[in-house]
Length: 227
Image 1 (tube, one colour):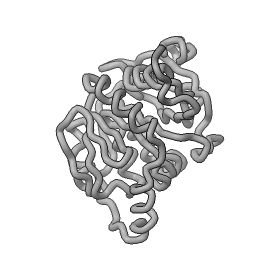
Image 2 (cartoon, one colour):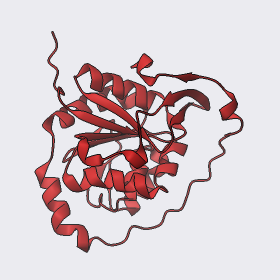
Image 3 (cartoon, one colour):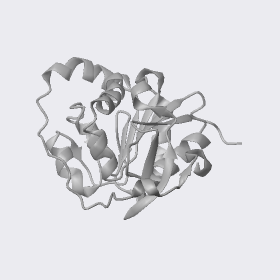
Image 4 (cartoon, one colour):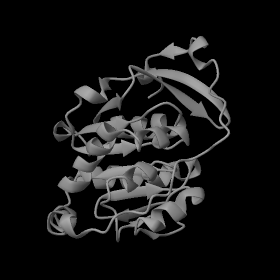
């Protein structure tokens, strides 16, 4: 019998429309196999996934963002997809939800475009991170030490570049989530929050994504069927 490293751990998976499907389903599957309880948190009751170049399945949120209490979770998962983090980073409630995990030293795992939302917390300056190459300049402008590696970890902050990195991402995510709160990061945040310079405004993404008629597709399902 495998050891359940994450027994008793409660993880929030924060997503909005257009999250990359495999970047939610595969990490959530790994987290559950390790014993964690995972809840999909979203501003919407139902969220549509993105699969490469087209819309994927529709997933039911376990908890609406407006009713979510970040303090009740032990760790945070931020899947990528282009549209998803672009919507989250413009949502004040989403940014504040994410900010709680950074401030408190709780572990956070973000993949692909997922780190985009972390920029809005203004709390990642000096951190070693990676991401999808097209947004690396945004992270560098936020003060991040960017590295082109399949997975990068800095005081409980786990990041990866793309779906191909998921095996390494999942392994490191589970290790960091099992460790729990990283007191070093928490203390650093407490002592430097007031001193951080403003983050450069990198603007919003203008991607050629066809969002037409997604509501007419009836692919509603329980997300736990695939996890």
